[in-house]
Length: 172
Image (cartoon, helix red, strand yellow):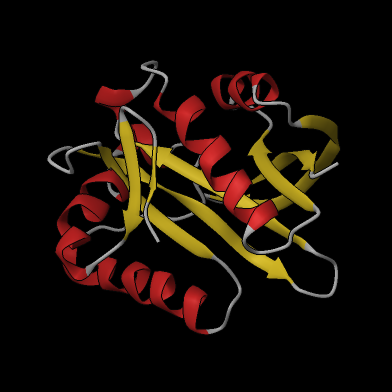
């Protein structure tokens, strides 16, 4: 399933994306607020398996975010932790730093949400954002996600507790 606008496309992640996924998920600027990172190409294969398993288990779907002609890899995004029972999933997205502030997130997230609501039958899409990630919080709020609260000191990252802000968008 490929999703497109005039400027970007979201296409299935393939094994040929391994190096680009590694470049993103080993970049200190990308992983500063992201829940996972990899120190080498070999360990990044774990993430590739995770992408495949999401679809096999019907618990989500992630796409490579690329230029419309598929020549430039911008990042990745999708839905995971899908609950069929509760008709909800969690949205995630990361971009390589050279593409920050260029409207790619604002163009990608509606495609992902529309797919979740219209193809997966979701009622609710949640975004969990580290409380210190001001740029992401501003961006997600602009995309009609509503702030619902903060889970204080709910996870440990790099040996320290972090808090997560909960944002959600409903189909209705």
